Length: 244
Length: 244
DNA sequence: CGCCTTATTGATTGGTTTCAAGACACGTGG
DNA sequence: CCACGTGTCTTGAAACCAATCAATAAGGCG
Image (cartoon, rainbow over all chains, first blue to last red; front, side, top):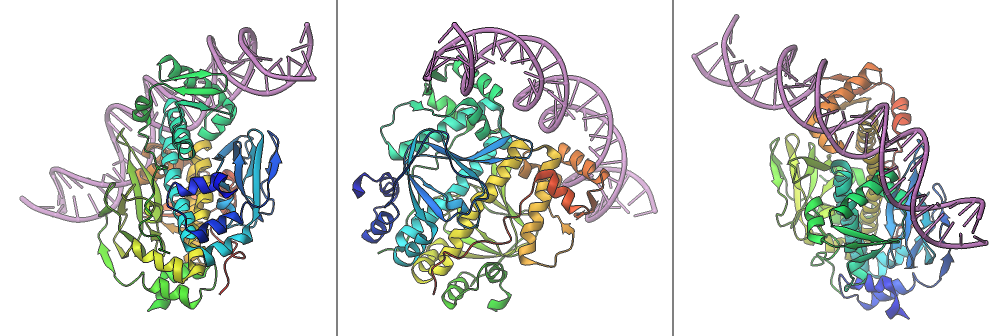
């Protein structure tokens, strides 16, 4: 059973997990639940006692703003743990929504204490991934704060590819994209109209090609230099981790 | 000695620290070094073996972009630990610069392993602060991605006040601001010209008042409703922490 | 077929950038 | 004391990118 856990697979990408780490993870994936496309698994302000391991499908977390627009703050893929950003709070800070049909494993926040007392390696790994996320978000902040619409789209696609490659090393250049242009605009701080125009422009220049719900990246290097993309996902430094 | 550590003071704000946590922290503040205003303590791409505890003065971390502009990704105050976002990498991802004369305590990254093996409470606290930072950055992303220049300035000031109040609970409404408008524009993804215009507009509307290097917040509630500010700094949920 | 969601395209508007000039404070040296 | 340079902030005019408003097209599905 544990060998087909995409969480184990994703974490093992960074460091060989010791037995205590594996045991800790197993206890997070006991239960499984299904949600249909469009379901809101929790709302902003809900109590947050649970985190979720994603087993299948894409989800995203978003925040509604007072002017009626919204910002998608995170996209969740299989093998991700949802909810870490909120564990420091008593209430959810965002709405969690299924972008397509999904399977999740919920587990209570309180289960994390045994990670810190029993599995220092896993604790260090989760910590490293959490702080790495700050760098990834800083990169993204630059994209949102300083780049044109075309460059942001390029950044968005490259970031998705880098993330998906962790779980699927032999990924092709075709990305299945279960998000509509309004959702993409809510990720990138644009409007759906301008997402459409920018996609069309990138396609006209031969950098990408689109086909119902998928994007094929034709010129990855050109996209990379367009937005100065750096892959922060592929490797992390684990040399400082406590050894077993 | 340890009682005047602003790091201990800041961390104690969230949870009473146990002796093992205090011992772990003490070992991070052994050495102290001075840097003059404008000094670049490390550059992007440098090896990163050290983190720093800020004892005095403001600093910031920034990234140079290919178009010549730059993005300030973090502002560091006394009591902050600098460098966590980078510990997952072998190289620095940003330049660290002293905004004024500063004192820092450098300590090697490798010293963190003893935190994870000996001080699970401190490990959990640092983890909680790291993941909370993701929420703070999400909030900031909304500000950058969706708000007008005036709203971003409002957000910037309120965020600064919330952070400074952790260390100084009786803070007045006057903020000393050792950053020039070009630096503020690099935080907010604006131009220095428009920062000036926006500051002037806020002052004309009676929300703030400026006096050589300081800003006085006259109408905090109006600023809050202008940018829908939520203080994420004040409290965190520590109920799930491992107990001693 | 008709309905709904999603994507495209055009015309107009507007907030921010860019470019440029001027004001002001401060320190330095003559 | 004044001249001068430097860094910082302010102000104006023009240009531009993306938002907004609005209409049309294209699919998917009952």
